[in-house]
Length: 112
Image: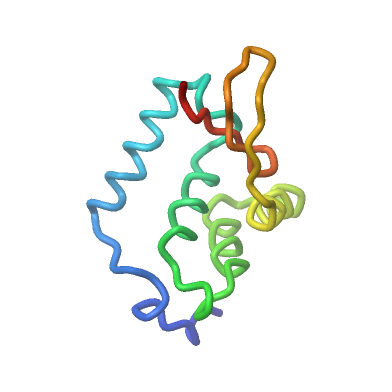
């Protein structure tokens, strides 16, 4: 299915250090749950990968399909990832006057 993709040209070289960074992100999220809203492992993986791929060489939909296979996502959850990828990020101001960047259902606190 993915045999025609040249991952060497498509993505920066990944290593165990990158996996450590992903775990570090998840740990930071768990320690600061109020700053990272609706961002789970699959969202973190998606954001981490799309931030380092050359989108002219690979369609992000393929990455989402791979995440779907890994996590055994149903069609509804897969559609949510597609929507997340296509969503335009915006800055929102919450009732407590805190600013967040929001992309579809994911929100990250921007700080004071």
